[in-house]
Structures are given as C-alpha cells and as structure tokens.
Image 1 (tube, rainbow, N blue to C red):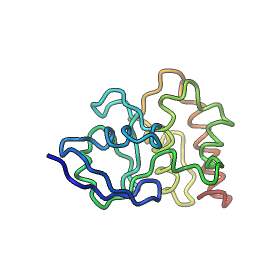
Image 2 (image 1 turned 120 degrees about the horizontal axis):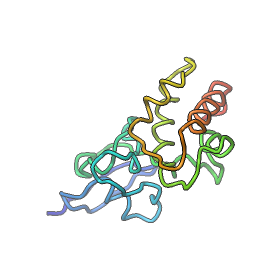
Image 3 (image 1 turned 120 degrees about the vertical axis):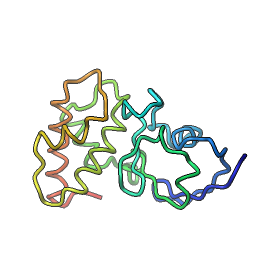
Image 4 (image 1 turned 135 degrees about the vertical axis):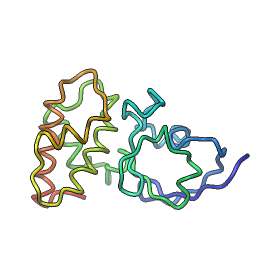
Length: 162
C-alpha cells in the first residue's frame, strides 16, 4: 500500500509517495540529496543512519517513514549553508575527528543535538561520550571526536552557530 508523506527535510517542504512499510532510512537513501544517511546494521545499533527528527537524534533505520507525517528532519547535508560547512563540521575537520567518514554524519547529528541543547553549560568528556554511545566508529579512539565537539561548543558559545 502506498501513501503520500509530507515532511520537511533540511528546511525544504517535500511530498513523497511511499510504501507504508518503508523506513525513514530507505526514503532518505532513495533521494540523491540525502546520501549522508548511511545504511549499515539496520538494527539501531551503529548510529550510521542518525538524523534529527523534530530536533531529537533517531536511528532512521528504526522509524517508519509513514510515522513522520508533518515532521522536520535534519540530515548532515542540512548543516551546509551556501556552500559553507557548519562550525561543527569545521571542528571535526580541524580536530581530525574524521577518518574514513562512514560514521561521521551520524556523529555530527548527535553532536549537533547535544550542543544545541546544552545552552551555556560546558560539556564534559563524559557527557559527550555518553551522547555518542550509539555511534560506532572503528577508525578512531573517539578522543579527536570529543575534542571536536568541545571546539564546536566553543564556537557556539562565541556566537558562531546556525
């Protein structure tokens, strides 16, 4: 059975004809502009498919697309404005928080949600690591990623955030 889905993705209102059993991951991956949302475990264990759904990080492989009618989704492509990478992306690059890059979009989305919700409170290493527990990275030891999140939070607190 197919149905129409109205959803806002990266600030753009979109309408899709979807299969009722299609996951949000499958929907996003079917569109060439959302290829940062990676398919991996399809069990919600790796975090490679993490997106923000109404501001909260979710594993898109576990969410039925039909359940997000009217919702707002942010993928890491939405962190680029006018060709400029978001300060969070810049911090990941500067702190060498990117190795092969497969897990990076999911890490970015969890980090974005964490920093955006932290207010002016300085995040601890433990808080950052806790927020990234659902994102597996086989290339790094997470130290550079934690440093990148701290650097990004400094940018946010300095007014360099969108």
